[in-house]
Length: 341
Ligand code: UDP
Ligand code: MG
Image 1 (cartoon, rainbow, N blue to C red):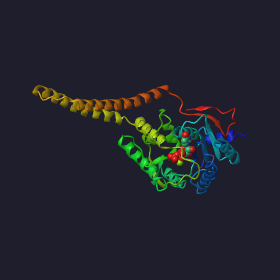
Image 2 (cartoon, rainbow, N blue to C red):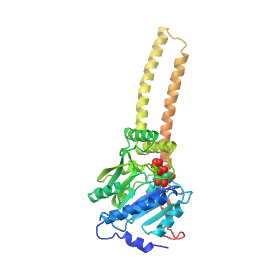
Image 3 (cartoon, rainbow, N blue to C red):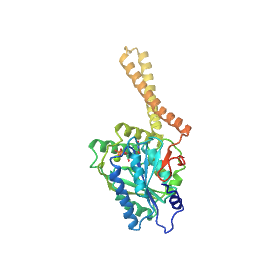
Image 4 (cartoon, protein in one colour):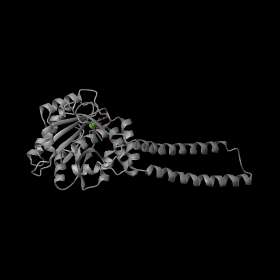
């Protein structure tokens, strides 16, 4: 069943000046949680439309990120049940950031505003009311910010908050305690489209786009069902990506540190020469080993960090697609125009 015509009319922006909202939801192996949260999103759209804040032609867009379970079947059957559910499928699992990007790039063709949110019910959907109001007041980007993390484990809270502090220290502009729950207007997304980087760190990139923006605060809940896909190793990888994709401050730090070490070494050289001529040298095996180890360590660290940037440059020069959409619920599987971005 193809809803192509309906989608085409949507593209032409409906009159009445009420914004069409598309909620963009990345889903990876979420078969347990999707049947519970999907109706919640629908209810939210109905409520917002009922209050006259958004257009009733608003949609919920699920992005299946190459799930290995029944997630895509669930999305397909939801879209058959109600046309307000739509879905796109990535050709394989590409990770949360790429899934969100794919969804946003697709949604911006049909809507005036997007709100990206996880599908696990952790982020309070009631914050959307305030987000839309802020948009109607003239903001193009509204960040959802967690006011409390009581429901997170101690470990998750400490590591996550440490992450934001470190990011800001390292020169990446991120909104404290904001993940990827945000409203972005189609206008801002058209500007955002010109950021072509492959190493995605969306929450650090949107502040760079500019436009009038603000934050909305909400409480974070526990996951309704299923399991987190962000173990410590993935969080560390995201933090490292965030810093090295957005800032060159680590290179500066290493350079600064290298200068200090060079000055100390220079003083050490003079000291050893003077000691030699004064005849007070002893077999300085331990100090030699210390210095060698120290310098070796610093050099390796420096090479590692530089390598990180070289690696990123390498990936950027390839210009590989950041997402490939292989299916859409509103097009027949064989007919889908594969969208690559
Ligand atoms: N997700 C995704 N691709 C992945 C991993 C996660 O699209 O490779 C989605 C997932 O379905 C969820 C969101 O990203 O909607 C956040 O993931 P999760 O809830 O597991 O992370 P946490 O909230 O624990 O940090
Ligand atoms: Mg989650």
